Image (tube, one colour):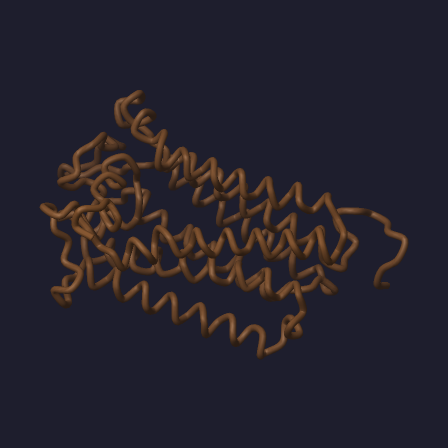
Length: 296
């Protein structure tokens, strides 16, 4: 693997603001030996600074919007997968709370930042896994909202969270020598590369495919696909801003902002569109005011 770029993080951390870079950097911040444009942020006392203020504010908005969606979901008593969708929203809220301290560059103690990063990355893979299970719930293999359905979702999500969280924390705290970042080897970390970069993408693609089959072949509907595809496009746009356009934004604004701001925004919009998609295919009277048949 040494002759390939698989597992290398130096280029990603050079061009993007990613939580994983906190555990790979020697200083446990977004600044490391990979170089690139550095966010300047707002100067504070003691040679400290507050970076990515825009992302921090958007994270706060995302948390508020997600709470509103949680409450709105609670009102949809007849909706299939209501509790499961609420679990996904709770996972997203935890991610956004962590993002305030991992992508938003608060002047934190290194130990605390690593801890937030471990929770953040662990919740990313656990939450995308829960989203995939939400698609499976739509097929009604198990009754939704039952202790068995919720329990299986929580237990399997916890396995991903604990496993990924441990590897992330071990990388930052150096509990063992297994995951120590090496600047001379492009900050290679195969485990985190698979768990952070690849696994969530696989889960999201599988979610889209399963939901598309459910909507088009089983429900025979087309309109919900507009919401689902819109969510996919918004998410992809956020990733493009973070991974591709970010260095141009950072250099063009002299380090004031980068693509992470737009990634947070478009991911929030994608989550909202996923919720609208789910709401449109569940047995409820939203968003259409009247229907020929339905539950009383």
